[in-house]
Image (cartoon, rainbow over all chains, first blue to last red; front, side, top):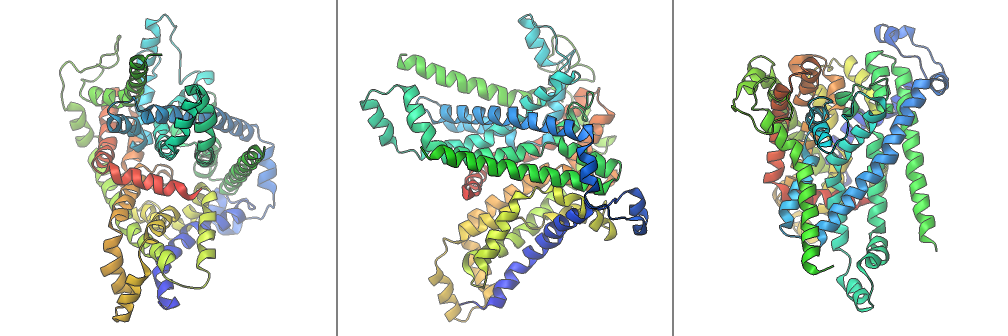
Length: 292
Length: 273
């Protein structure tokens, strides 16, 4: 048996780092969100005042907060299903016994995941350029008028969603692929003997067996998509007409552009509460679906 | 549907998806060798007329890309090496060493994963500001020195080490540190490679925190430098594509070389549920 002291010595470095650079700041953020910490307090701490829930109250009355929340929810509600659909589709194709050169395709489809968001966002900015972009050129060939992808408030968020799906679908594809490979082949064998069509096999074997994987992937993807920041920062700078300002973008601007660190902390906490509520909701819904 | 048609359909769809996945990356590579302004034409050219290294020369000689590259290499290597040591020690302790409250502490750590990292960023900035670490390499490296995900990954893997092996070494009089170095680390080798690639890629691609804590150009990492160049040189697509190549190529090459370990880690890390 080891002595408890030696165990704590092994744990100490990591626990100190997590405590000082994560746990402590999270607690401090809660306190910070209850103060009016701003540029004056940054210069001299004596200017700091306790304002209770004032920051939260103010945010709930600010149109920009609600529109940032709306844009983020739009991104999550449309982006997550599209992203998971693409992942599942790719995984099904890769898992098909008919597919050739599987390792090669898997690597190609996964490649966007390991790239740097900023660098590939810059590429997409040019591919979706209104005048010279490849996207409009290809659409022009089939007679569609050029779209101002990143300059039109109606199209900027869909373009960012398309980008996010392209960048991320490979990650969940790998997880789905492992889930598909874990389904016992006998199940399909039996279904084929009973004369079930491929579509029915998918509905009654693949989807139910993939359920736990779907739930986990869904929760992780939702919480990832709530943290939208770098894409609008590089592709649109929050524009046009603030149509791509996400909650984190608002937090960044509020905190590090205007130095309202108190109110920015309140934004961060509201986002956290929302993410937590959505995760709990997803878990509840999945449990209810299991009952019948 | 005939089997041959089905086969053509499956492979055709895969080919189409692979083309969509790779096209932007190949286009970036091609445009990075074009002359200034060449890509802004209709129809958009696919290949450079006279390929040249001019954009890369411009980037490294005038735009300070060499400095950003060096910063990225330094920061990502430091984070990888140091966090590897911290996470390996803690993950091993959670898997194999006995102490009061082990399971409870570990569950608390996993529970902390629901808190998004951005919540901590504002006070962390103030903490580092009062410590004089804003706009320094240490400001980027220090908060990344340990991660719950890394500890989790090591713990999962280290649980497979047989207790008898460790007990035998203890009976022979070996100290805990010696056991860790001589017996445990060699057994953990595959997960060390996996964790190293994960940490390196995450550190290299990280954007929001370096953007906040690095306020001066001399400390910019590649993503921050590229984002600031993209705002200055919005019209120079050829130059920007060369910048993207420099940023993306190292991580893409690393992934291709060590793909097996990376995908294995991805699956190990996703079973937590």
